[in-house]
Length: 497
Ligand code: GBH
Image 1 (spheres, protein in one colour):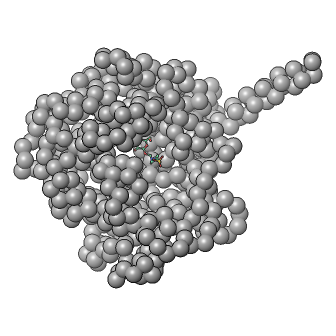
Image 2 (cartoon, rainbow, N blue to C red; image 1 turned 60 degrees about the horizontal axis):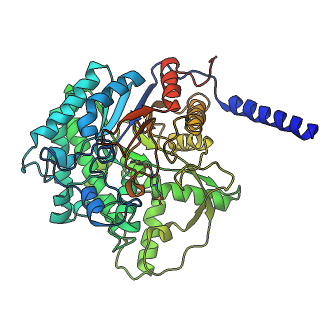
Image 3 (cartoon, rainbow, N blue to C red; image 1 turned 90 degrees about the horizontal axis):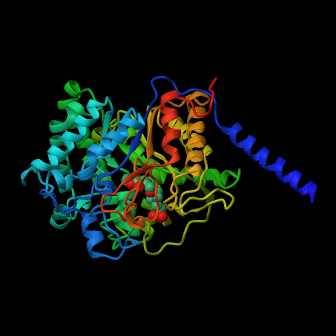
């Protein structure tokens, strides 16, 4: 009786000791910045007020049954009406910067510049920017976090059509003109990989068009890269000098850990990273798609009976135009996945996962979260950071999203605190031990919010929001105190070196 109990006490103590031992006790550099992130459709609500136009997420949530709890972003956190309260919370939290996105159809209801500019929408973002300025919080603004004006989808098929490039560039230019004097960091697109792969292949994001797998997603990426480059060039030419900001695209990726030390698995991991991160990073850094994508997609396309590769080709001018269109790399990273070599999937109906032909899976011992894809693997953030440094000429990196989900209603969110402590420990190791130039970090998310097709069933916020109360009250979780303390001390533990 006694011995097992004693053992249990020591075992528990040792676990506790080990956990604390993991956290790095070095301080973040004094100029390192901390922030929190959100996105317009996920928090604003006010979907049809004050002249806002319909977007593809309004349409999807209203006219399909794809959202798990059948919810919508009609009200969400109601940040459209509660922004003053939100900004007060941000002030209290003590962030250096706030990453949020603009709802395109709130500013331009049809999406077009020659439609009407919606003054109420412009005023909304101006007020957010003034509230930020009042508190000395920098703004990082995403132009496109997935809420495309519906009219652009209806008129010409949205991101599958080259028409999009000019239409997006006009919107971007308007945003620079209106808000740029108060924006330190611009993001053109959030996660083009997700926009294209989930919007146009597996149907997990709006507009959930799945009719041409292995084809549409590559067209989508091609158009987005050109639209991104055009917006970047406009900023560079006409606004950078006076507005002094930086501009980039935000890319998401897991770390893909080789399933074994076998060289085949190393190849699988590298190929998977190239097809996900490299798909966009290689063009903006080196001017074209990764060679492994060019080769594999072409080879399979021909075998499938296509006249040419399903991966579109850039002209020499386009390559020159896209190359170098980043002032830093924006990285959204949450988790790690194992990658294992596999024989190439047989030729048949095209699909991007067949182009890659890599087995991916999770290690069952990794701690889970409320999201089935999100396992807690803190060392992965260090490895992906180092891989980016080595693969893309040691760029400045800003971690634009990183965070943990639970099912909600948990105010003493110790697993989220653990996640931030351990992931940030590994950011410190990347900075000090691997020499990665990571300069800022944004926690996803400021508030619990609308988690796309998972509705309100997965909560990422530092602040809880009561979605059954029409007032949508916000309540800080324990992670608020922990994050506050990190920002105040630049230190993850009680006492830093
Ligand atoms: C971020 O993407 C988004 O930018 C943000 O809006 C979102 O709230 C946040 O993630 C949390 O999810 O189960 O097959 O649909 C991070 C990259 C890509 C991770 C899609 C989750 C879902 C895989 N995400 N992935 S699936």
